Amino acid sequence: LQYKDYAVWQRAFQQKEGYRKQEAYWLKRLEGELPVLELPADKPRPAVRSFAGGTVSCTLDAETASGLHRIARDHGSTLYMVLLAAYNTLLARLSGQEDIIVGSPIAGRPHKDLEPILGMFVNTLAIRTEPKGDKRFTDYLAEVRQAALEAYEHQDYPFEELVERLGV
Image (cartoon, rainbow, N blue to C red; front, side, top):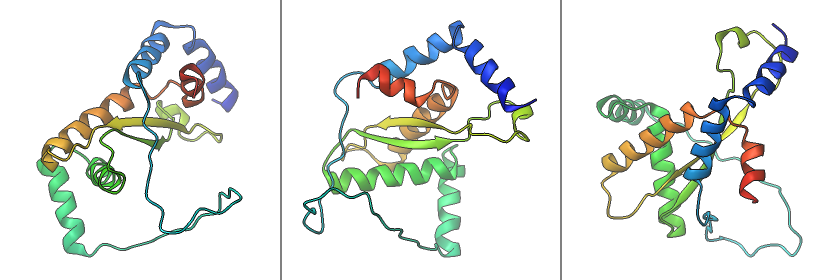
């Protein structure tokens, strides 16, 4: 297989019912007013918009990492789901918003035959959840787990087309 074979497969997929079902899922999941994350700024915004950024790194000690893995295992989720739930909780706490959408990259290689092929397959999943303040973290984790699993099931719908369809 070559990348062009994948492109042909993807074009054929767009003509099938599965594509329309995935599109319907995403349009339903992201219907209504889409939240725009408003985080408080620690410095005044510059007069000229810049996309310069930075990186913050941290290392978790073995006990904390083990605890996170235990939470994932005990609740039938993955470490990614636990960290996504924690991240969304942090964003909700900082912003005061209870409707959060986080874009998460996905490899975009749904078939094992695509693994050795060079090319850009990455897609973005817009995972929308509601980290409301009155929820227990474990209940919210179950919601994040479900939202992530549903997003994975519908990962073949291109994010660029979703943005275009939503008009954002």
